[in-house]
Image (cartoon, rainbow, N blue to C red; front, side, top):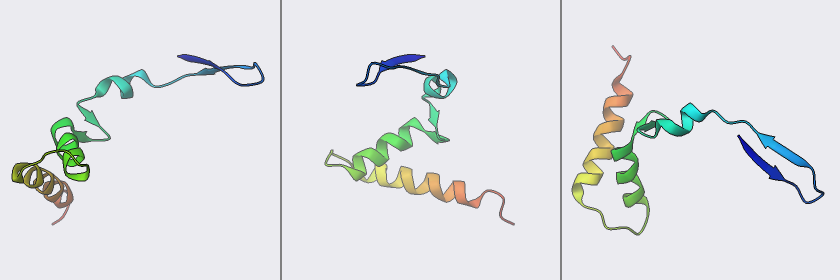
Length: 68
């Protein structure tokens, strides 16, 4: 629970789902290593071909679920 104060002095209490914050490993259903590889590919950071392969393979596998 986070307590913040607005400019006019009113107290605001924000209730958050601590489980979603603490999950970390699969935030929004995407594994941590895939998220980090995607951040490197999207930003200025150093990346290699394995980052690209990891992201592509993850989304290929994800999109095949449920198809006949």
